Image 1 (tube, rainbow, N blue to C red):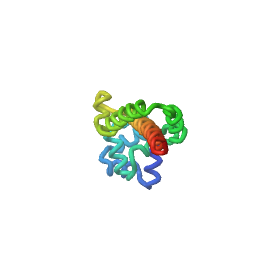
Image 2: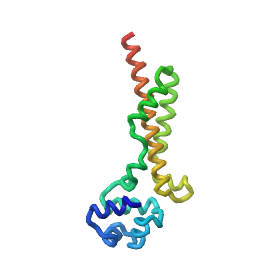
Image 3: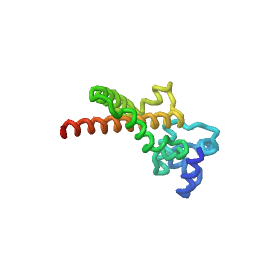
Length: 152
């Protein structure tokens, strides 16, 4: 995880200093920074707290999901012209899924058999973003339908 090293250096810390603040061994920090060890979610949280960053900051932008603009456009195009009933039904499904994803981020490791790797966390966050974007597109189409009713 080169980002841990980059952020540590940006903060002007040594591996030993970061380890002390995070409550992990210097060996653990070295292993994570060199990619010889996949950190547990709890370790990532400790490192993030010690560096005063978010866990998501450990993931390079290249690994981030596509920008929201094209994804939103794709969802809007997919739902444009749908019936109100279809939109309301999908709206409820998406809201339920969004709540499920957001409600239990700590349960993610449990769902994955005990430990979530950084890749698992990234997938979870990506799915959360996609569900939120589709929910936004569906809500927008519902608003368009509602405004058409008002003007009719």
